[in-house]
Length: 155
Image (tube, rainbow, N blue to C red; front, side, top):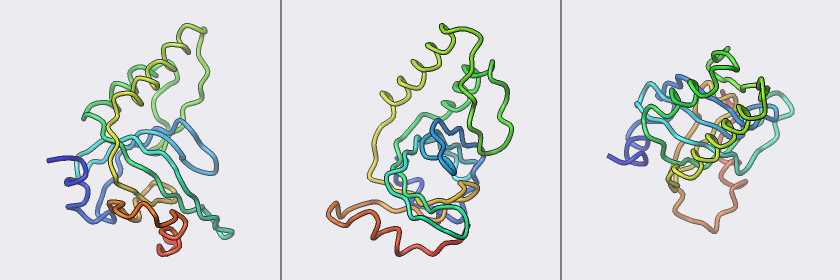
């Protein structure tokens, strides 16, 4: 079963987020790895559109790329020097003892991007404690902000 089939088979509000490792953060995760306990899956996400929420967290629309199960555990081992995740949504502080360790971490992230397989899936989330929606983008002409405007602000 493909990641697309797997994720679309379960309503997004039933997904259980086990761990997020965010590599880009601006008022919330923008790019990183998501590991779900249910359905069991791992994927790379990247924010492609945002809807500002003056009352709290912005709503984010992200693309999804397939990663192999176990990828997040390998990433955490590679980043062990930075300490264990402090919360289910973790943004490691990119401070290493020396430049070679930082270079190795940068290479590891670049490699993730190379092996991640793009999908047509889009997910919607605010805090990433939960995923608010997931669908396959079939109409490339619809502006992404129009898709976000159809989703209520609840997280």
